[in-house]
Image 1: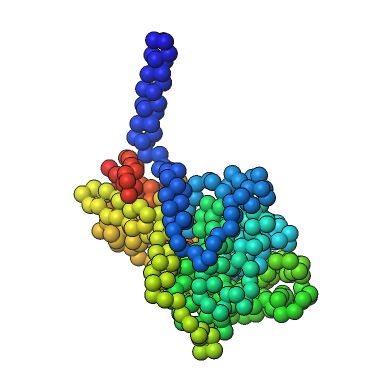
Image 2 (image 1 turned 90 degrees about the vertical axis):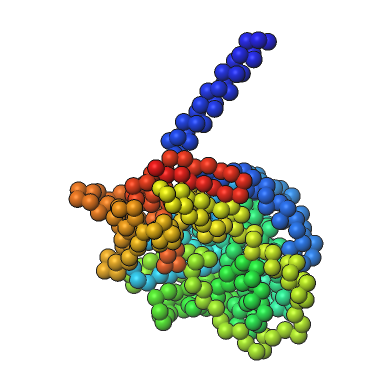
Length: 437
């Protein structure tokens, strides 16, 4: 017995030593498993209109791999992180797919994987419920998942906002059980034109959602069996401005859309477009609210307080990020930073300016010049590189990238290049705290 106690004590001692060494080396902080558990009380709060179905049981029965995915730690604040780099371009195209998942979604994913680009999938809760393995694949391959309501029924969705909200929340919960994350992007079935009044827009924004329409309609849903050549023609219509949000469908009956997809991608590549995914930072395309869409009745103020007003908190981590930098300290509130694959990501300009530095954008080569704590360096968010400004400095590969025109950078990389490497990362109740030299 004494030997067992002695062995156990030694094991605990070396375990503690190992943890202290890892902290001293400044290894990346991992989000605690409490992230998932803390969402449970919020998920149980009265945020939905009408009773929820037991989606979790159905999801587990449908696919064994998804049962594991349903309980994995969320890897980011918002939708699944995208890890590819944009090509140098002033023009961006967003390929969006509505009404899935279906068997055709698998073909779309194969094409996107072959072409090396990502898409945004606005899924129906009813379809996601029956094909969770496809939702899981969309997520795992780095695409973004948006919410397209539960069943797409106009008569249910656009009579009363409470019904629309209920379908959004129902679908949100289905996706959360599969991926561990709540979709923050929403597309209204049929678009917002003629369907949304000002109140719909206002309440969705207040609830923390980002509603996206489109400015390029492929026309693949005008009638059943639209031929691929017509879909290509519609999907490559020129737009005013530098961003094209293309509407396509991957639901049942849209095999011609899949057939058209390679030609659509080829067109935009030849035109010099960069491919990207929609995100909360993307400037949304929204149709104007129309007088004819005004609803006969509106939700009560009490209903709004109980359902809408509290909802936005679901999309934050709930933790502050504090950074100690020499004699200075700054903080990022929940939602101002991201936790992606265990790494803290922050907006570059916000970080530097809050720590007393300066940032300038070099339009000729699309780089960001940083001056902080006596150190000067440049970031290339298009090429994914960091450049020390001193003589003989060599570029270093980085995950710095653009999201909606804002440069985001791993916090550790920014601090290292500014001469203040991370010495320790601690997690206390309510905050992450990063300490530097």
